[in-house]
Amino acid sequence: MHISITTELLGEHPPLLDIAIPEIADSALTSWVRGGDGLIGFGIYKSYVVKGANRFEQARSWWREQVNALDIHNNVHGTGTGPILFTSFSFDEAEESVLIIPKVVVGQRNGKSWITWIGATPQPALQKAAHKSTPLNLNWSGSNGDVWQDRVARAVDKIKNDNLEKVVLARFITGTTNEEINQRNLLQQLAIEYPSTWVYSNHGLVGATPELLVRLSKSLVTSRILAGTIRKTGDDERDLALAGSLARSSKDLEEHEYAVRSVAEALSPFCTSTNVPETPFVLHLSNVMHLATDVTGVLSDAANPVDIFALVSRLHPSAAVCGTPTEYAKRTIDEIEGISRGRYAGPIGWIDAKGDGELGIALRCGQISNDAHSIRIYAGCGIVAGSDPEREYAESQAKLLPMRSALEKH
Image 1 (cartoon, helix red, strand yellow):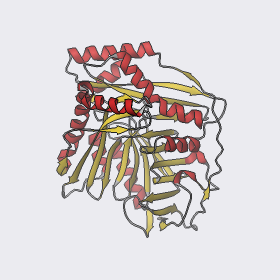
Image 2 (spheres, rainbow, N blue to C red):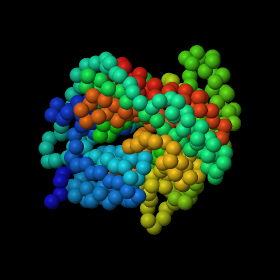
Image 3 (cartoon, helix red, strand yellow):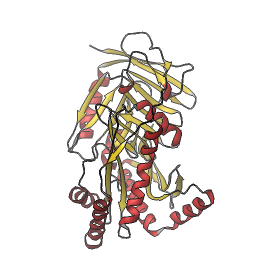
Image 4 (cartoon, helix red, strand yellow):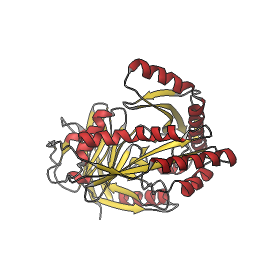
């Protein structure tokens, strides 16, 4: 039996993150939005959990199976229309990854909007969500700074005395509150404060990432790599000088080069041509600045077309969230880091029925508990031979600020 799924153009509607569907609870939101464009899902038609070394292949097989069971009526066409799979993969293969097909998806790109819904029912009615801001009184705990700095020092020693060039170490803190954490309020606040990031949510994982692991659109592949960070002061003149120092920093340029090289090498077997800029640009966010490079490529016209599942399985984990060489870095993380990352630093985003999509890296994020009264927020830093534990700890504190700030204004 085939289930009907329909995509139609949509007229005027509230901004994506303000849309509500009366009969669907806010807790079942999935989203991938940047600058007002993107996709937002409501409710859960089906969900699936994958884990293990073949989790990307498992996800592809399950998604193909679901698409084949749908009677698709797509009157809009184009990337991101029709059936949509929201994906959130774990960093480590041993942990669970979450796949969600929403009941309803609203999309917007370049002034065009559309709605997709499952079932032989009339088009769902959209309304503007009632926004009620609830300031949260959060108590923070976890991740002793001295302990984490000791881990950084151990990693630096390993880099100086082993075959390791770079390793990314993460930490988390946990906030608890008597009030319920509202996922929609958090998404809206992140979108206001960090408009150049991709604001996302999937099964309680909420964040705003500046890093695009891979976009595939009609055989054009794009990946945005960030590595090398400096904190902003809020003084424009001072920050301009800091941006210049970041662009000249040998430690940060070295870290960035490792990350760019790992992405370019992963993509090259699939592409007839790739474009890797010689020097990075400085990406300005509201609280930090990053060295950034956009790597692009054109997929080869092979007998077996490549989809985004194949690309992400080669790209993850990149040097930006793991290290270089990958296997040495992964073993060092397992040995030194001492935490469960869950879906932090894993690929997150969406995939359509043709295998096109956008997957970012789940950074600047938090995992909301099932009862919505606590959240675990994460930050990580790239450690190289020239890293100073105290400075890396300060950088990690800066990376925790986006979530802390958004929660306080939530």
